[in-house]
Image (cartoon, rainbow, N blue to C red; front, side, top):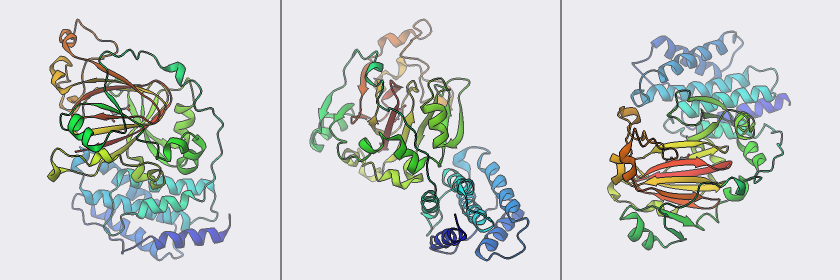
Length: 404
Ligand SMILES: O=C(O)CCC(=O)C(=O)O
């Protein structure tokens, strides 16, 4: 790669700055850190010879802010700290390019990692909302991904087990909005929706792992490690999508790893173009409080388990490929499911519906269990607070839309 590429990339990144970048005042932060960030920002806007310690300085700022972001409850982190983290991530990517002698894959991957950290932990800055997503796009286009050879659809059908319906969930082929609202949304009853994803490019494009790798292989994403989040040895790790695919998704013997409940689509806008928000998400029980759906990706190997839990919003879980088994209970059955008493886990049941301990949880016998298997191109409407336990029967990619 040539020196021209370096100039081109730097010019493209500068072109993304719509309004002057301003470090946010943040009384919770040490003022030396903010001054250092200011110094780094000034340097990259106007680079000069004396650059010895500038990379060291931006790394110091990022490490300091990272610790601030990871201390205490996430909801209590001041937005300004997150916005400064966004600026610092952008500055690091720019400095790495400006100070490099050679722009190679390694350097571009480092830049992309800085940008992804900013996307994962930072917050958008006014008038420069797309700064990091667009930066990532520009850098990603310069990276060539090694193709992988796999047969995606190998054992899908053989893996379907345990699907005898206890109580079957209703299924409809592309119901009208009127039917959906009157028969399911208003009474808050679950429904399997068929034929509603035929126009999603994702249903064909994402079958090809090489396509996903090309778009997102070098992007850093959060991965849940361990089969279920209620287990003692469960943890989370940041890694590139490529490493996740190699170590957890394709490897039959690796630890279970799950790209779960992650807003991949705000991070990687190219993938958002492959999905469509279901029209049913426009329904609301209270239009004054209605919001745009939160869209999350769920990509994992066979065997991922989301333990029995409930969420405070309506959900459409859309199955792009692979099969998942869902076990559902109505919110009315909550007393029979023994929610955890600890507030952090109070939306999660102690009962494991696959292997219930009736001695410890005798009232579980009174709960009415619904089961369904969701296959490629099918969606499940899960009303507010319906309990759900989800097991991937094969490799699987789902997208959830939570809304109210
Ligand atoms: O697919 C999964 O593993 C869990 C999905 C889920 O819990 C949700 O969409 O709320």
